[in-house]
Image (cartoon, rainbow over the protein chains, first blue to last red):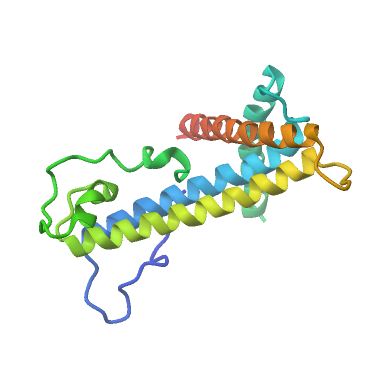
Length: 87
Length: 117
């Protein structure tokens, strides 16, 4: 989750430079958004894999399934990424 | 409902007295903490506040839609002329369980990323 250049920040194209404090704030918010998007996506996927009919609590096995599911998704992501970058 | 993590994960809690605004603008003062850092100008603070609340709104709306779709899928398996008591109960439980699942995943992601860097 490294910072990519530019991004959607306003203030390019010949306008006066952005308030550095605002720029820092936007960067922070962008990081939060990236994290939240990842967590939302993983919850979406792992919910389907791990959780049965919703009751008054998540069982222990549902909880560990969710946790493992998220971690293994990230592992898988690295494997696939490595495969793609090596051609 | 807050933006996931309630803003507490990245934005520090409001500090009183850290920010100067003109007294006439209670709105800015009220939300001064949301920007998380002592803003140099009230204009910057206002932009930060607007941005943060728009992102929170967008997140909340998307989250609602996701939970609705997921819980409908799990709980209303054979739609009939009305929602049964059991289906309603399932939907209610489902909302809470989905949040719980989100919290577990969030923690797992944090742990996983920490372990790798």
